[in-house]
Amino acid sequence: MARVLCVNPWIYDFAAYNLWMEPLGLLSVAGALRHAGYQVVLVDCLDRCHPDAPAPRSRQDRYGCGRFSKVEVPKPPVLAHVPRRWGRYGLSVEVFEAEMDAQPRPDAILVTSMMTYWYPGPFEAIRRLRARWPDVPLALGGVYATLRAAHARAYAGADAVLTGPGEVTGLRWVQEVTGESRTRAARSDDVLPAHDLRRPQGYVAVQTARGCPYRCPYCAVGLLSPGRFCPRPAEGVVSEIAWCVESLGARDVAFYDDALLANAEHHIHPILDGLIARRLH
Image 1 (cartoon, rainbow, N blue to C red):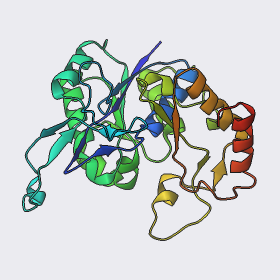
Image 2: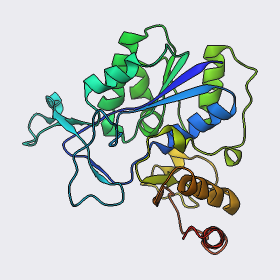
Image 3: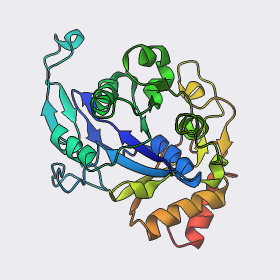
Image 4: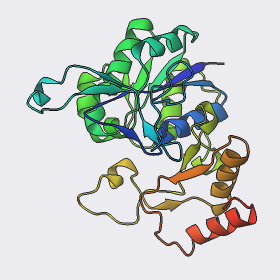
């Protein structure tokens, strides 16, 4: 059974705060890989509950949200004129390397990315992973990889840049590089994100629909989720929330939809009815 390492990298920025952040795309890919028979491991550089690197706490923390640990690092030359301190947010490099020391050699590595200007985090993770396992196939996906694919291919140092929703493309790439074509794909509605790979944070992120029914010219949703607006079946959303609350101990749910209230009567109302019936309101 091939082993796939999934990495949620650091944030490099002037400021960063955890407001119900979860690498939902990466966990969705991990769920599809696990369903297909792969062994999947997650290393989350933004884990505020890591026992060896707990994040700062304050009385203002609520619902699992709060500050990340920060280490000041030199600003990129293009930002040298900004009179603020640039930092790396998340686990220390030492804790990250210790996490890698504890991992057997993977057969494939997947690194995700979030906002486009946060690309230094994925770049740093890829650089360190390359130094440790130079011959292990490595792919970069996520928001930055999709919106700035040419930049990522030129500078990230990954073997492949995967664009768009990754459940299919990620599985197909892992099959190619591991040679395990016996594994099977599944419809995204049938496989839940692998929330359990992440250390409990007190909350989970849930997406009840993919995409948006509108095509505003200034919005990137049409590039990130091409195709039509695709609501999930209400029973699948209710089952996911019930699993996270009853089995994983989640107390709060953050909805990651781009158009949560679109067609609410036929989409959100049945979900709410199902949650009330399960007494999960």
